[in-house]
Image 1: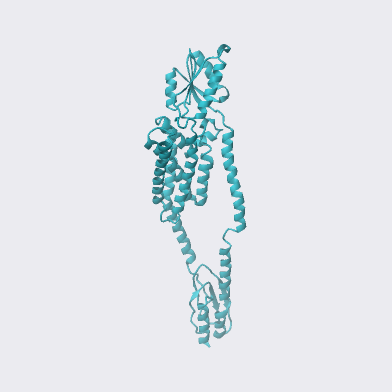
Image 2 (image 1 turned 90 degrees about the horizontal axis):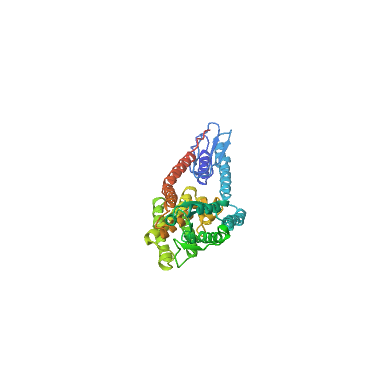
Length: 437
């Protein structure tokens, strides 16, 4: 009888039922057991099943009879039933951990609507509220006349005027990107100095203001008005339409490149420094390609090819490294945040098609501290103004690129810490329980 009980316990262990075999003179049953259980009987030997897998069940069968009764209880008792129940419960939990299809359907409706609201609001609001706001301009000429012009321009906060001693001084300030243009009063009338290369929209605005001022000159007499383009736009693109149109695809390409680089490094083997190398090489190649098209083929910007390519490459690396870096730190939500920030905030607030001072506050200022706006201003300075006025934009782009690349390269260390923490957690749960009877 004792031998029969021992065989029954062994079969229970082979089939995965939990519980130790207890009987007079019987040994402990062992096997691939999921769950733990103890069977206790008078004078019995207590054994514990080995815990394997992620499913844990517990159960205890208590017998008061002799070894034969206790052994049978061990083979078919509550220990095995408890383990099976635990397996069912845990399996159900895993099955229910996914996202419900109804939630996915709701997200498919709500998320595009939210993105559309943000995008349309940003683009349409900035375009619908275009107006001069503290546009820096110069005034030169006889002191009394210059003071009168300055007083008229300062009214309403549309312009931020600077007095210059001569027309030459005003021209130098325009070439150095300190002002967008200037009004110079002289014996022959009023001269309006403009810089369409800096902003065709502002140049048109200054021309209109100068013509109105000439028609309402002192003593009610009209004076001749002459317009001089100190820094003209490229003849192939006098209104800057082609250059403006090229920047939205550039921002999208930079953001997409960041997403693709993040996806390529998700497995951890190509994360960190390999990702940073890909971002740098990709950005340099994009800069050369864009300059080859915009400057070489279409001929809409002048200047040094390599300098212009470097400005574009720095813009792209600032955008793509930010998107990839946020993904390395925050996962998919970080990638989405980076893309939305660059495409739906940075691009409409960049002022590339108008000027930062024409955008509603604080959109113009915000746009210049984001890579798209800083990159557009940097390219104009590099191509048309021999690099004047590019210092602040270089700093902005360098900060974004540096922070993004640092986050990307640090992702390997973050992965190691997470893996180590997960390993310690798994070790704690994998320790076998102590069962006594």
